[in-house]
Image (cartoon, rainbow, N blue to C red; front, side, top):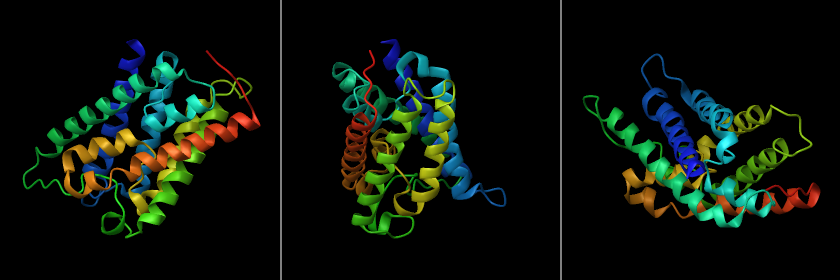
Length: 229
């Protein structure tokens, strides 16, 4: 239960911090942080929670990460569904907190609410194929970094930095394409409130990250196998 609470809190913070920066601060007049600021915010949420909660739950905060670590031999299959449930619930609650804050401003309109999408719902108008490839590849690379940075032979104490910075880089690349998911819980949390097109396109933001994560788990297990309890 302590692990599930940690996953809940960590995913809540990722959604509140990352999506919150996009909804509240990215386009704020004169002081807007822009795409680069949003990318940094997502990286900082993961970096801070890796150091705060990593020793409790392993700091997944992402169903795709849980899948990748399981396939890579780093995570017990029996914990997979409970972790995913805690992550999705944490994301929805985080998005709910963000909704309460954002709707407290006069003239509030929900709009995209930092949801992920493709086609006309892509920030840059990218196709479904482009979105699919982007999410698979970006999640693949994210898991390669995670599996490598947390390996027993990796330098100790730097995993959080590597993981947080890699997520920042991923957002810098892919925000224009899909608004960046690489995390089904993060996508579900925003789609839960936006509904409509966001819910209809949500399938891609579950399938693509999980496929990318599973491929990374297989590749890294081949390159540098390690079995952890």
